[in-house]
Image 1 (cartoon, rainbow, N blue to C red):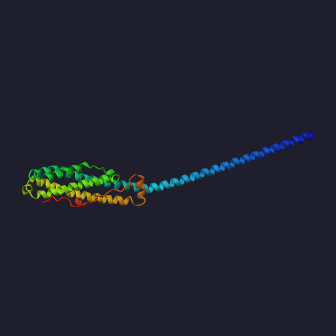
Image 2 (spheres, helix red, strand yellow; image 1 turned 180 degrees about the horizontal axis):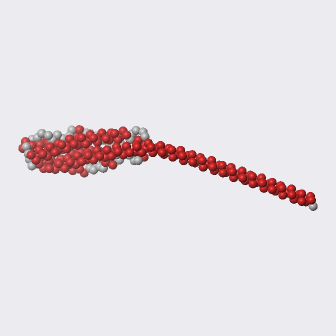
Length: 239
């Protein structure tokens, strides 16, 4: 009987020992998993902090660059608007100018019609300031149309030289003075536009502005006037 009890006791002790060993093993496994998860969390947190620092540094440099880029872009838009305003002013003066000339030189039909046709073509070409960089073909078309109008006006001025009575007309003289002033303002507006565009185009080619410009959709260079012979020599309207 005592031997049986001793045997049962030994079995119970062995079972308890085995259970204790399994518990210790499970505890060790759990602790190991917890340590791995803890290390993994620390790793993610580390990368998040690094990413946050990078974004903060990028923002510190990007915001001033973006603001400067936007201001330069607005300068270009304002200069282009001034160019268009002066060309439109010239277009508005031409009909009365042509009618005045026609009263004294009606048989110069070809020259007069050439001016009217060139004016119609020039005023039909429209281009928004925001589309200049994305549509250089339209910019070239606009520039060429205005150049053709300048050439037509130059031919008309040569015709006027043959009519002293016309040159003495007060209405013609007033229109001629307005047209002359407009041609001068066109030249100034074009010069100012070229200057601000050159600054803008230089800016978007320099690091890190070039990266910021591409990210915000302003990476395209603005076109400048390709002055041909007609544009280099504005029509002379003084007598």
